[in-house]
Length: 91
Image (cartoon, rainbow, N blue to C red; front, side, top):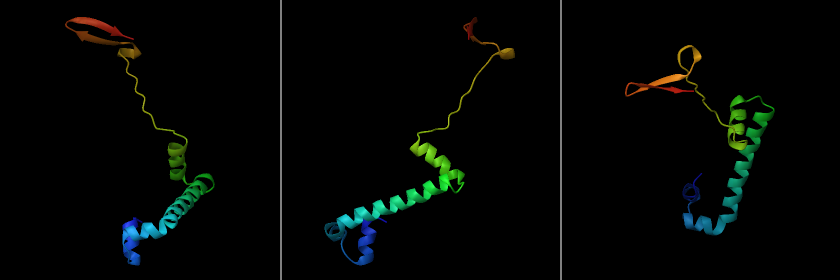
């Protein structure tokens, strides 16, 4: 939750919140992130959650989806390009 919303909920200015509760704000976010990471990790490793597994491999292991296209000419041969009435073979 944004700090200005936290301040509004407890009836103080955002600056006052940060002045008096800076440590707690940092710890709260870190603890929340750790809890989410733990849950996600458990889902990916023991819960069989495919979405969590995919997210983990992409964000933590730097895996990515790739698309590879191959172009071939007639009957699997090379591609012929016609430029100014001249044929150029590409292999």
